[in-house]
Length: 156
Image (tube, rainbow, N blue to C red):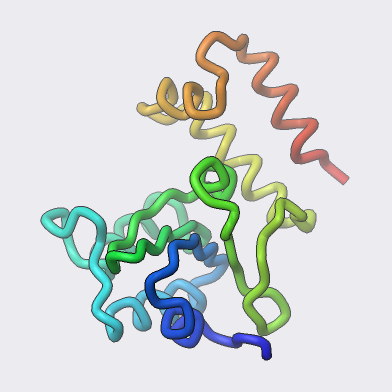
């Protein structure tokens, strides 16, 4: 039986840990509303509510981003799918009106978006050293990192 919305996903998977990748304003609003209704909190609640954090992330990253759901009803955020893949293979997103697993099978649009997120994380972000370390690039030349990005997310 297919799951067609984030609230249903959260209710049916209570106590499980997974990552939800939202790709539009509508999906982000649906997820935030469901998280609020079900009593989830941002992992560091003193930073703000889930809605406040979502607004801040939206200003920085747009609506496309990933939300890690913990069994303790805590929520964490990073804009990159591949960032979360280091911590969980349970990454889901909305595809054609149903929840589906993201197994790294990007369409052209989502590959371009993910590539740009990682390019920014590796080369421009003030926290780029940590991003490089997470991906094993702490001693890599910029050209090697760019080559990896081009191979992982080829332009079609």
